Length: 260
Ligand code: CIR
Image 1 (tube, rainbow, N blue to C red):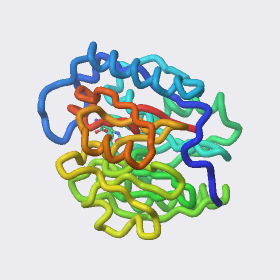
Image 2: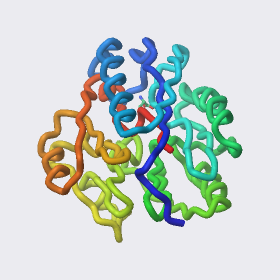
Image 3: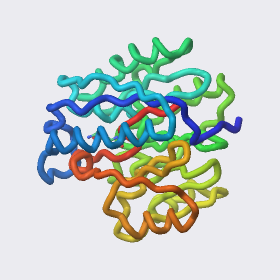
Image 4: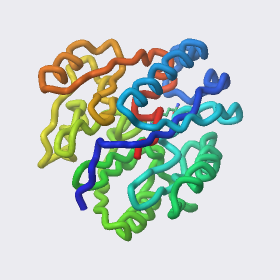
């Protein structure tokens, strides 16, 4: 089934909790500044809205430091929503919170159940299929459950592999249009995008790969001028958003919203 893959009328976001200072991170380079993160988040939400989309802005959840990264808690498709089962124990409860919101919006809300684990950051929906990267957070049982759910909705799911040491599949890639992927060279080298047109982020700008195409815009973290220039040269309308604080807890542009 081919889906519109970057045209969205709605998005869900959650304001960063002050407890984001306790957010998970692979390497400790200091805690995020909450005030700066709030300002960046407001810029992000305003940018989503500037495309004409409605943004459902959820209240902060102090008990879940990483809950600003709503993408990991669910997958939203035209046919229904799937509540994920995060592989990070401290994030498991976020999914139940998101389920409450999704049940107000969708008739069909299904859940990934024990023993499977899967986080939304490992899922890339393209114009032709759903790619899911197994990672330290997403396992074979979780992928298999999701494959059964989306097959009933007419989608093809393909299991791929997030490179070792990379948090999520989408840490290293984004969809730019139905056939075009922005990716790091290390992820593209795995062959998972064979048959797609792939644009590489510039060497040394790997963190730019976690961008999003949202309606007419490509929303990317600021500070990656060669990749931004390359995208502009390829005809994309780029908006850059400061990501310094989210980056300290391994977050980027895709993690901050559910888009549908
Ligand atoms: C975590 O480690 O789970 C968070 N600190 C960052 C989650 C980023 N989410 C994403 O890439 N989809």
